Length: 46
Image (cartoon, rainbow, N blue to C red):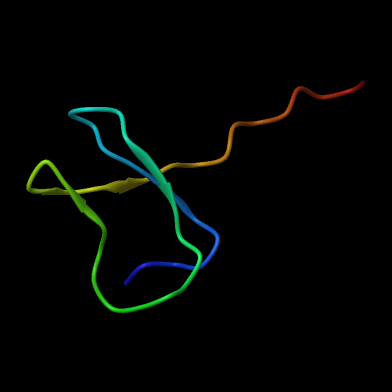
């Protein structure tokens, strides 16, 4: 299921998409499912 607000990336060609509407299924690119990108950790401000 495509999740609203999540960014997906194709591991083959590097294409990125942002999901603006939730729905059934997973985005496809290069005939493969795209993977959800995890947010980058922010540096701590100790």
